Image (cartoon, rainbow, N blue to C red):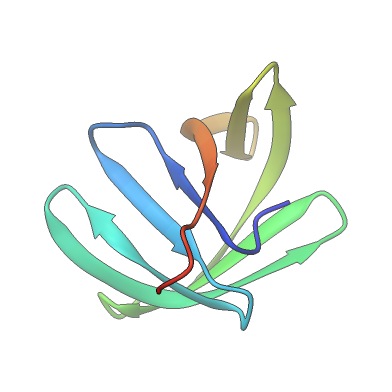
Amino acid sequence: MFAGHALSDGTHYTYQFQRDGSLTGAEMGRDVQGRWQVMAHSMCLSWIKPVGKRECYEVRMAGGEVQLSRSGREMYFGTLARLIAPA
């Protein structure tokens, strides 16, 4: 579901999930990089830039929206869009 797609709320963040497990994007105007992995109903992100620890979120779909939550608290809510392959 995430491979080859971008997750964005349209304002605060956009994460691009590459098929090789890498993650690039922007969060509040800053570039971010990391790795991503889906396990069962969880999405785990390991941040490289900014340096951070691994964070895992429960994944839920609500209509056309994706919700990532941790310990029952919504952390990210946005829509998925297919990445356009470079020409």
